Length: 205
View: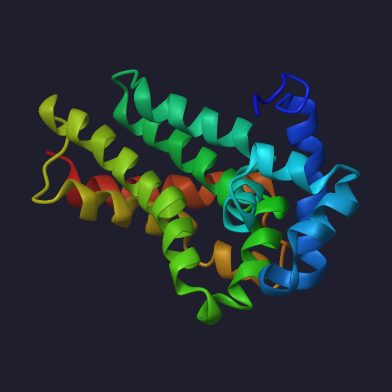
């Protein structure tokens, strides 16, 4: 049967994801069902399946919902270097931290982490689509900087992981433990500034 534009409208998709986020947060991935999600979203089960192949696809979509603008900002910085390496890295690091420290992303990560042992294949997909994809994009940015003669390294992917790790430091574990005090913007910028200095000391050509 042909799917109508109403069934596939962005508003309906957002409505489904809103209900799904609530159900996943309350029940976790295993106990949540598509029936419960449809009821919470106020749509039919058929409408949910018109938008999402299965519960896994719905869960993965929930992880990115609400953080698209931050992801787009980070990707734009990675894809359009200005030629000022130090300034670019500072902006990239700050955008990265704002993304991974966003309350919505941390909350959804904790929902899944509590039962990750039961669904290792889902964890692998989340890692591939999120963290690993980000590392690869960062590596491509660093490769362009290397081609311009600004950086020198043996492995761009390892260099990308180094930079991201220097930026995150202990911030990610702090927010996972609900220790958000002291993570204001000024401290975020200072953390990234230090990460950029250490990274360039190691990798500047």
